[in-house]
Length: 248
Figure (cartoon, rainbow, N blue to C red):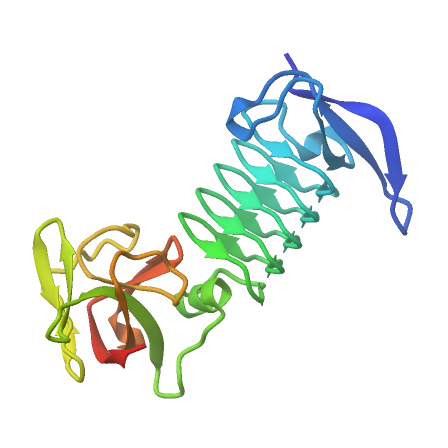
C-alpha cells in the first residue's frame, strides 16, 4: 500500500516547475502523521519513497531528482533539490537547503539556515545549523556549522563545561561515581580516553557551548587545542585534554 498520494493542490515555481502537495494514506506514528493529514510539496513521486516512514511536512519542498527515504523528515521551509539524498533518521528543517549531490543520513540534522551542496555529506549524530558546505565536512567545518565558532589562529577553541562547585570554590564532575577535578589555571587530561570517533558518550572530557544542558551548578570557560579534539557529535565535543581558564 502506498504511503501517500497527491492532492489537487499545486503551485508553479518561477521557471515553470510544478509542485504538488501530498496527503497521507496511512498513519505514520513515528512522525505523528495521521491518515488524511496533508503534507508538503513534491515535484514527482520519485522525490519521496512510498516505503518506510519518511515524510515531508508543511511548506517544505523536494524537487528535481532529489530523494527522501528511510525514516527521514523534511519540514518547515526546508528545500531539498538537485540530486540530493536525505535518508536514515535524518532531519532537514527550518530554512535549511540541501542540493547538488549532497547527502544527509544517519541521525544527522540540518536546520536553521544551514546549506549543503556540491558533494557535502553529513552522517551520524551531527547537527548543523550555521553556514554552508560544498564538500565532505572536516571536523573544523562540522564544529563551525554546529556551534558557529572557529578556532583562533593558533588552533585553539573556546568551549564551556558545566561542573559542580564545592563550598571551598573548587570544581569537579561526577560521572557514575568517577570524580574528575577541574582546577582553575591548570590542564585537565584524560589518559584513558575512548579513541572511537563515532561515540559521543564515551571516555573523555565533554564540552559544548554555554547552552548545552550538562549537569552542574557552575560553568567553566575552557580552552582546547584543535589536535586534542576526539570527535564532535550531538552538539558537544569530546576531547583528550583542556585548559581551565576560570568560572564564567
